[in-house]
Length: 173
Image (tube, rainbow, N blue to C red; front, top):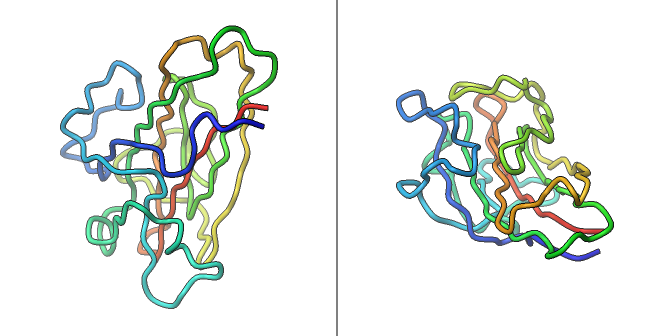
């Protein structure tokens, strides 16, 4: 397999909040220039240590922005698909705590532990306290045709959970 969007990729992010909510944030044409910049592997770990610990996976620490308040964060991660018409599939691999919705090029591809009608105040439907969940979502190679595409992720926490992790990757196989 070949990495198309590795862990630690550049991204823009914003804490999900009613006053800044825009229902088209996951569309490629959305203007995210006012959003903060970081790298994937976003989250925080507080309280007792997780097993395995999230700390080595976190490159964008959201603890001061989310703990004791915000239930989610929005992430926009550009990536470049393979050129030409490759045979195979793209796989979005997500390490998450607690839930998320994901879109590629504005098209929904996965909702894990959340409703498909996410909003600024959404909470995860499951709590994965102290551990992350790894999921894999397949996308046919022919469905990503733009020379520059976008993975959009709405990561959500379970109410006042003491940890949060969103670490997406895209692989081609």
